[in-house]
Image (cartoon, rainbow, N blue to C red; front, side, top):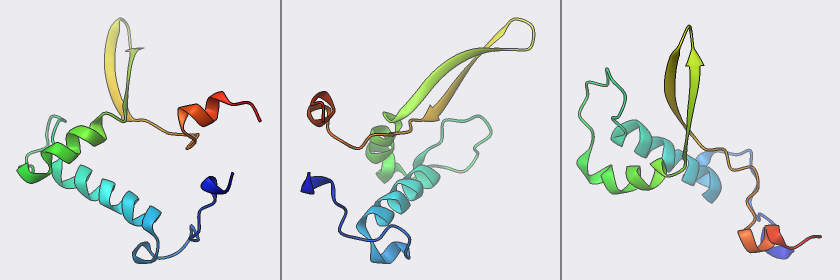
Length: 93
């Protein structure tokens, strides 16, 4: 159980905690390297493509009806609500 204890506080400046730095890094990569939406005219940074592809695997795809009969595909990033490994999730407490 001690493997789930986070030794750093959550609510501090991003330069003080690893978890916040990771979130900042993902946001940076997405903002400078993700160019898959129509109307995004700025060029992406090609050196970030490998990281963008990895981050995009966290996205979620949904198709829903909007208006009369239009089926619209929507992509979003996936929310990970349980940070335990699959093996840990399979074990009942």
